[in-house]
Every structure is written in structure tokens, then in C-alpha cells.
Length: 198
Image (cartoon, rainbow, N blue to C red; front, side, top):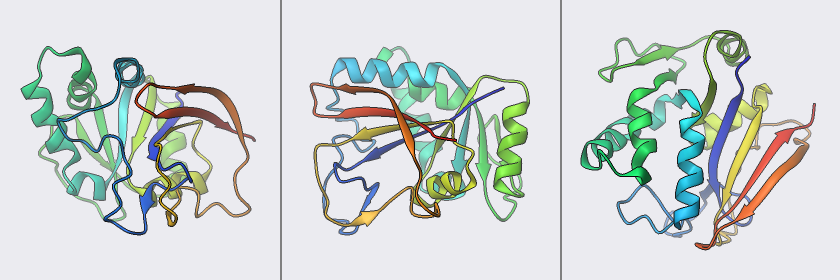
């Protein structure tokens, strides 16, 4: 049985999007200037090494996630820090959308529709290693509301944004979590890993 991991950067006050888009709160935001320390880069890559499927929202794909990391993998073919970018290309990508997108131009990429909880449950029961979900607030909130997430990896940035969007906004009554591990890094990021309480 596979697990579903949701990995997101958050602000210190728990938001994944700042209400004010001018607030620069992420230590790293996909750019080539990657100020994470070596230990965090290693641990981040280790998470990707252990999965074989990446779940994406259609919005994330349209915003250039696959194109960006494909170019990055080509530019850094042998650098250990960018092993995750190569994994994005090598892994199966499953894109969730309410409207079928047809054929994707990226290899190993397919569309998934239907009821979210049922689709994720079917993917978990099938062959393969763990899955990781990458997306914006809406996708993360839908996964949380569907109750299909097995592990949350929250990369907490050392900035408070005051107001914004939460990945748990759609969960009625909130979501109780068990802290499995917490690790702080020299660059200021703290990674908290939680499992939902059933």
C-alpha cells in the first residue's frame, strides 16, 4: 500500500500563499540561487528519491512546473543537489483536473479525473512506491478535505506574512496531526513532518 505525502513550504504563521503577493517570504522559490544549506538540500532530495509518482494540479502544470524542472535537470545533469529535478522527469506524473486535458507533451505524464478520494485510494492500492503531491493551496486543501494524505512535510520559512491562504482551509472542524519529527536547518528552515490523527 502506497502512502501519499504532501510537501509544502509555509510561512512561520502557517500560510502557503501570502495575501500580499509583494511579500517575499520563501527562502527558495525555484530560482537558480538556492540558499538552502547542504543538509536541507540532501534531505529534500532524499524525499524525492523514495517516491515513484508525483501528483500535480493542472494549475501547477500550467504555471510551468514540469517545464522548469525539465530545463533544470538538463542544465545540471550530474549535480547531486538537483537529483530531485531529474526525478521529476523520470517519475510518473499524474495530473488532476476536473476537465480532461487529453494528451500531455511530457513523457510519463497522464491525466486523472473523477472523485478525488476514490482516485487516490485506487492509486494507493495499486503497484508502486510512495507518492508525493505538489500543488498550490487549492490542490493541497482538496487533498486534506478528502482525508487521503498520509504525511505532511511542512517546510516552515522564517517569515510571518500576517494573512494568506492555508492548505487546511477546506477541512471541516480542523485536522489533528501527530508530529513525527522536526528538524531545523542552518538556512532558517524548519521541517515538521506530521501524520493525520485518524
